[in-house]
Amino acid sequence: MAGYNTPIPTSVMTPDTVSTRIGELQFADGVPTPETTQTLFDHLDFLRGVEAFLNCIPAASLEGLRRGMLQLGMDACHKGGITDRLLDSNPLLLTGNCDTVYAFAMLDLERDGATVVEVPPGCGPGTVDDAWFRFVVDMGMPGPDRGAGGTYLIVPPGYDGERPDGWFVAESPSAVNFLILRGFLVDGKADAAVTMFTEGVKVYPFSERNDPPAMEWLSASGNEINTVHANDFTFYEEVAHVIAKEPIGVIDAETRGLLASIGITKGAPFAPDKRMRKILTDAVAVGNATARALGFRPREDGFRIYPDRRWLNPFPGGDYQFLRDQGAGGRFLDGRTTFFYLATVNTPAMALKMVGKGSQYAYATLDADGEPLDGAKTYRMRLPADAPAADFWSVTVYDPQTRSELQTGQPLPGRSSRDALVYNDDGSVDIVFGPDEPARLATNWLQTVAGKGWFTLLRLYGPLEAWFDGTWKPGDIEVD
Image 1 (spheres, rainbow, N blue to C red):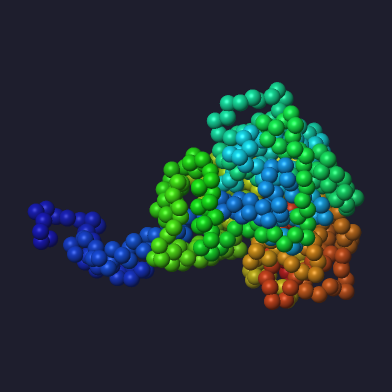
Image 2: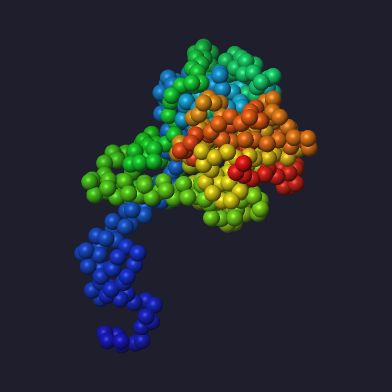
């Protein structure tokens, strides 16, 4: 080979012209031309923009929740939100349910310092997640109070203040934290749970414990608020706000470096030039499309709960940290992206095997033939007898665009084992989906909308062994 004294392997050489998916790349003895250099940098910025979207959905989603709660008027920790008339389809909230009463609070440990949360006895599953939607602590039945009630203290990083005896203390790496509590219905009514929350839940700064502000409860039921993160350029602005607000240690150096490569750094404004804005607008479109491919048509078998059914696991691998093989296989990146694109709230109680406690989930985006669910068609889905739920099961329909409850003529688009359903002779039950109320099984009907798609989520509260060992399996959704 000319220009060398020794044989040089072709594997280490770069030809003067290289054909790739982004076009022909030109080199002068290994040095890229100015035109090729610009093409490569544009492509690199695009790739990092896509990666930033896929990896930072948790942060943008929590930020979307914070902004939505501000729309409701929750501008202080003692101002809580509550679905006193259940969560209907007006608010945009990722795959929320209409079967339990939600109580929310937004904590800001930078503003308020260590913050107290008093939880009453009988509280259902509750969780605090940090600004990156990572688990901080459970409350209520799956928490350390085990449903007996208790006082929690959520403290910021490096907190060295008082930790009262008998309190449950949890340290969060972030300033902003989201608290969500669930209360079960009694005789199909929300009254008992609403009273439990409005009279028993208290949230206030620890510094004001001797004279805490009275709780103010704001109804989220029927409110047209948006808690869903953006899927356009605004997404990066949401993430930039999180980076500006939170301690630098809220994320690792690798993620900080990824965000810095597209202009998002702590202590500096996010102000991309015209070129970068155009690239990021393209990147977020591809990132959003990729998240939708992962969520609605996943390619990995790990998402499938059964080899012979269409039901998918929103927590593939059964790990709330999205680790494969307890970390030996690294982070399940596609699993994390999928979960946070479709859902909110991250807790071990939703992922781990906890027989008779917590909750388990399965979702379906395709019918038995592998086709997207069509709002103009009528479908039937059979749940076998003896559904393995110690508390109850529910089925809810969602809009694939907003990933929130499907807006139809039914404000509460769900059915559950607590409803007056018609059961088959063998104890199984058929849930009917379609645009028009059926002549039969009207009580089992969930309305869809012609011209819109939909997907569904099956919830088991207090899941039993038959769910975990797979001996009980929901039927696929079939065209009726």
